Length: 336
Image (cartoon, rainbow, N blue to C red):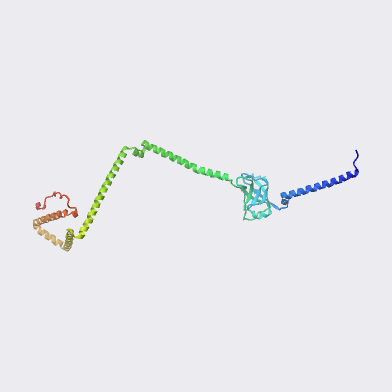
């Protein structure tokens, strides 16, 4: 076996140093490429400010280190650390980009939301403020937790339960009261029960129905009679217009009688101033009273005959049975 040559050994050692240097350069290049790819170097070169966010008392609501912060829907920072404060509150420190600082002011508020409403990663949504700018040496705002839709539905169900269940209880009590009332009515208790279960009431109602039917029949007959009267009145008007009966003469006699009454009224009016003298004359003429009574009886008899003739006219309802005999004695039998 022959030993290696010294010249070839020196060549191999010299090449090994070169290969090691090449590997180191490749490693450094790969590291730089990886840093540039993930953006770490970019983040190192970016200027940021620290914003302290006081989290809700009920907890972080899913917020964690590395969660994003958005302003107007745009990523503006990252949660760097979450710490516990001595006042039993939790505070999150957020690295805020320089460009987003003008949008965050003292009246800004942060809301912890879920990316997809009920699921997804939690993030901080900072509302744009309009107040004075923050002191970024110790910038602090307060955060609230957005109510999840499931919590809203649960609260709605609780509200419905709080409002509907008392109504159902009232309906149940009302139904029980109505059922008890009907039971009492069926047993004949109370005024309504006695009215419903009473046979006398049923008979009274039947009698009332019969009376109503009778009244309706009587009204029907009355309507028929009124129709007949209307026909007779129409016929009478036609006859009066034609002048073929004694109605015009009767009307003339009535007019004459009215005229006589008017003349008598005027005579009485003229005679009123002479009433005392007339009374004295009456006293003086009292001796002639028997003869006057006889004349009055005769006049009364004539008036009775006239009334009998008037009753016989069909216009005044005549044509029926003769009137009954008067109970008082005739005027001829009256004597003073």
